[in-house]
Length: 357
Image (cartoon, rainbow, N blue to C red; front, side, top):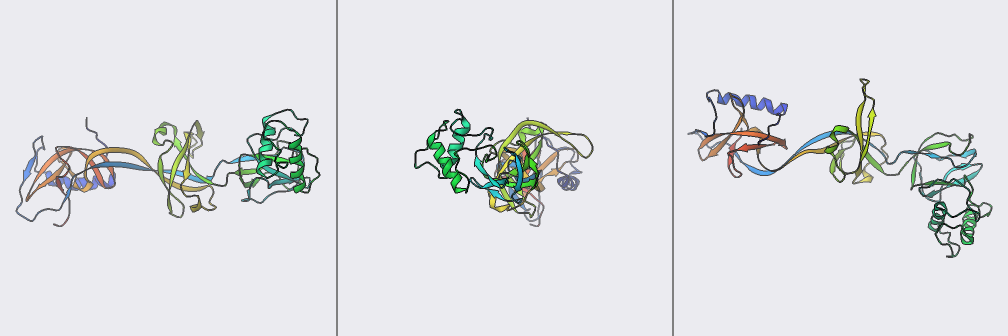
């Protein structure tokens, strides 16, 4: 069964103009109507078989990845905070508490208990040992990354404490370390220098140091984007770059609209092909160009080759030497100035288009 699609507005004007050509034609049937011409050969283009991709532009937001909040693991007075935009790596101070640095280490588990040789085995011990090893504190090679806090772990902790100018206790207390999943970029502060905090208090917003584009896609259109799809992104300065869909959230959320009615959407995360192109942009509006529909291996002609019939429907004018004939067609996908046609027209034939011969 052939497909029929709505004709784009700009194209409709062209087709209406073309309709005047057929006021004397009662009907284009299965057999082609033939017109002869004694003038010069008309302007023609070749009918092609190709893939047509209809594209759609979606609104997106360029932001730093993985926005979240850094929470305190210890109590005391905040004596220093990093400036917004600072990127903090493993081994650097996340903030200062009671005049001592709270050191950034990498891991998924928060600091929830003091760690020393009296601590029972656990994944948090292995996480600490992994970081000590990464920072170069290996107790002369005796440190083994496992879930046991032993003498070698104590020696590694003492060496780490010495590097910070701290007392070498061999104990990692609550508030000595802030575990995060990787390098962080500091956002808006929640705590303030001079404030007194307790474990669990929010310190400041953090993100990853690289960017992503987020699209809030209508929940009933989830099939429009899939993981691995390549899209085109237009930045605020009109620079165009590529991105790849990294995640389509399975969670449907409701957003507030200006009209007071919520929209059900899913969050789509898009990875940028070139992180360096976006520099320090954050929460910036972007346009995301996606493939909305693909018609493969279809017969196509330029849109301007379409003619609107007086009785309805469309036709193209096939050129055969100095003569032409009209062939009725159904239309399908529009893309890149071409339109899919279905009818008695073959690739390689030539159709008449407006122009000066």
